[in-house]
Length: 360
Image (cartoon, rainbow, N blue to C red):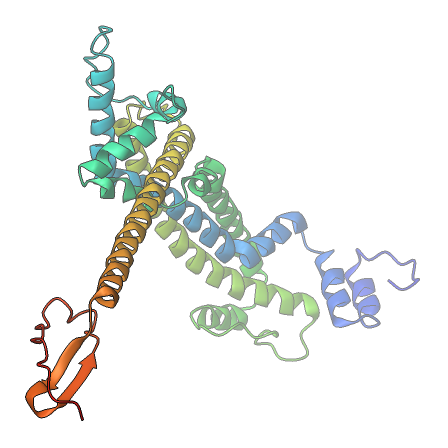
């Protein structure tokens, strides 16, 4: 209050002090006389942050939903797991444990760690087997997966269901604050506030009573208009968020059941973390096998090129060792000697020996 010791609770004093303040300071001074100021402040914060909060909750649900759908819709992942099951049963057939009917989620951690005597992992051995059968493309399912590590960060309800619950609670408080504030407006202002609330443009800064209205009336008028708009906009957004969360709950239950977890008490974070680690090891095994195949292909191409170069060099040497050929008509003295080309040496005819003629 710029040095004054007057009590700001009195309306007349607040108006007198407010005349000496800048507009933002006058606004906060005016709020000191409002009842339930803390609730109104919470409502104002909700109005400012509701759109962003709904968007963040929707994005979190989208990431988790994307992880669920990627795992449920993958065609190569079940084939890969069936292949590993078959391989495991074959390896364990002499131990009495070769009759497994399925792959449990926890066993994938062991599959990632298992190695042979030569240091080759089980997944590398399996990738090599698929390579020989021409089915290495089954390992490419890992390229179509979203980041399960990223999705697992948003599994916690605080990002989705908890966020929706907090939004609904804040929206309820805002709706409760509106009637008392609307009651402070005159009939003309209430009518104009209802009209402005239906418009897309922001509300005017002054009430219908005109420029002479005090700051309290202007703030109340603006609060009512913007709160009405916010309730409608946020309410529609929250309904859309609830629909997203309903789909998320259904896909989460299906994903948990698909991997043998309890639909209600299962931990989706554990599912995502385990399959992310497994897919990472599958990617490493696939890339290692691919690198070896490409190295073999390069070595084969190099050997083939060396063989061609060696054959060309032998042809040229053979052509150079052959005697010169006589070209022309020896009887008329039209004779020349030419070396056959390397490519033509095998097919070039040999000229008859020249007859001895009288010396010139």
